[in-house]
Image (tube, rainbow, N blue to C red; front, side):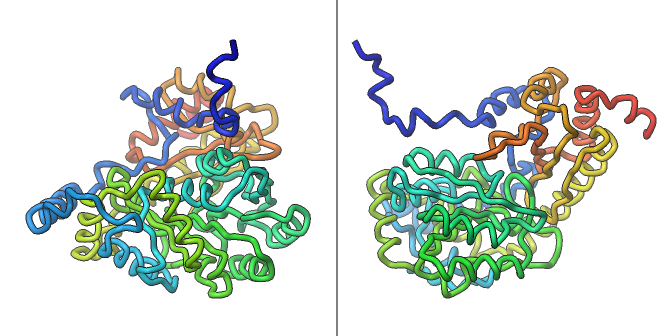
Length: 403
């Protein structure tokens, strides 16, 4: 008799479980200091402000908030998302926006609506592993793109398009996950030029842009009007308001693609929570998000600088590490001979967690790489976590000498 598991979708069966999910189970132990997940700091959530927004919705429009809603999203939330896009220099109307249950659902919907088994999708190497999963369950073929300290190399994109005839390219241009790299404006222009001369879809993921530590607002590549018929821009409130609210969006100027994504959503989820959309829209309408985010950005920057400073004292000689200008992540590469996947469970025994780098790659994974999230722990807890990591890396004596 054929085992039952063989009757399951073979594309889904081929996708491995995220190692971050396994690490989350370990991180649930309060004695563990976790630099693994990109979890916003809960003490910085505006709990009172959100509670007031929900109370307002129930007091003024309770029956509607508890009812089914539109697949594309409630009008107030679509308008709010369009305004946020406009503030980021992206031309957008509410009609071009579809609300999603976070940007992760957006990635899944785009993959379902866009991809056929065997389609080629180009991705940065390394890149966000849950996007790789969302694409892989559709049976696509993922191809890696070369990058440098400024992000994706335009010539590499052009060569890959010519070689592979891909359906789409997936990019995180601002505070990329996992590397923290941001493409400068000149590089974004070069990428837009390449895509404008092709028929390749751009899937641009932009969940971190508002967690910036400078006044520089980097315009998404999708803002280029030449890409209106081939660009999908995903945004989210998870990193700036609350991941538990589960409100994100897709900006899709192409009407046919937007309609197909809507059909996909209707078939899989019907809608995004009505009450969450109305509460989020009310919050955005009654709060200046620059004022809301100012203390969050300042605290995250302090935590990032602490992590970088402490790591610089304990990482083995020959290590390389970035210092991001925003976002959530610090990316590091240890010297030859280190294997971060082998070390991670030893680190857990020492009471500290990070994410090994190899699962973020689709080709040529570097076993020496690892990702740290700096947002979840305060300054003193960060210092203690790095002290624990020093014992695993064998750099305790170096730390003691520099203290």
